[in-house]
Image 1: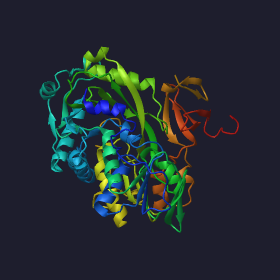
Image 2 (image 1 turned 135 degrees about the vertical axis):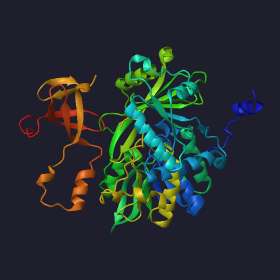
Image 3 (image 1 turned 45 degrees about the vertical axis):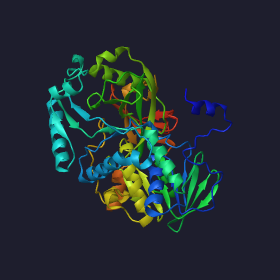
Image 4 (image 1 turned 90 degrees about the horizontal axis):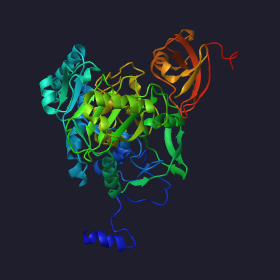
Length: 414
Length: 89
């Protein structure tokens, strides 16, 4: 045992520095207030300080940082999207992700694995071919591969799905597809923002947003009122509770999405495997657990309860592809909230209320967008108009019938 | 197993039902036809937490009906056929 550890055991105070400070009380006024201490909100605080010199910022989190969508997703990062707007945006995110561990000096375990989207019918294979061609046209590394390639890369897979499901005809393969330690992304941004002067207030719930003459004037919290002229709502699944406070109508509906992990296994699965037909995506984490997620729960619910239906369905799908997992136990299951938009693109940027910015509609595609969202929302708040990369995602697009139909948004279940 | 009370068939397992979205006023009742109003009707939803009136469909019997449900606790408060709200309390 290292001496350092023994010394810690005998020491009264824990000598390891905290990742970020815990300020005792809120100040009376901030230049900007960010509601939601997930990756997106903390990312915005980080880039506001780092790139725009705005450091009088409070991040308000009603629970603990990274406890919402940030810590509940299946940690997949990819950019094989289908609209030029989406592809440009997510490609920028992947580029930022690749450098993030170094930038934070904090290991995010960013691990490029290769991402398979399996096709269980000739029609599905045609769709994957179309996706690959659109991706290539947009400069994204993506191609259609045959059964032999899948079998060679993932030898454990049963390409005929045990005869219970339609066989696999091929797949869309996206080599840069990666996984990362998602809570570390929140911590990395939190530490970076904190070191540059932003304050992170956990256990602080927002109870109201004060709007006077169409402009933001402050935020009511359970710990008192804060004066500010800029507020960012970055609360994903809780967005409808915040937009209600300012009287903003949105298309958002909230559905839970469930995921599970198995007990840890020795490393065997390097790739990320997705099957739309089986409503399943899975990968093996750096701890050895198989992480698997499903499609959305079938009806609206603002609750993170788990169901047996999900555990049964997910296990069945996993066994169809990897029958040898029959004896492997499920360690835990959970749910996260998905704020869904009708076009599967986010809602980002300015709103009709001056000083109220929104970063929402993150449905099932929020984690992979964390760095680029933080960066573009910080730019938008600092300049009070939408960053070039997110112009197409403004809330006003619905009023103009200019949707950004992103069929590549989620791997399964739309 | 979660049970939902179909107004025609009584208590049935939730797996027999399909969610049909929130109950909204018939757009044909609207006097106006401005683009903004249509956009609001077509896209915007009441996704806020609270007790909602929703369309549900009993698949085996082909019955559409209304359910009042708390979308935070997932408790169904009552169900009735469309238009029968007063009598089927």
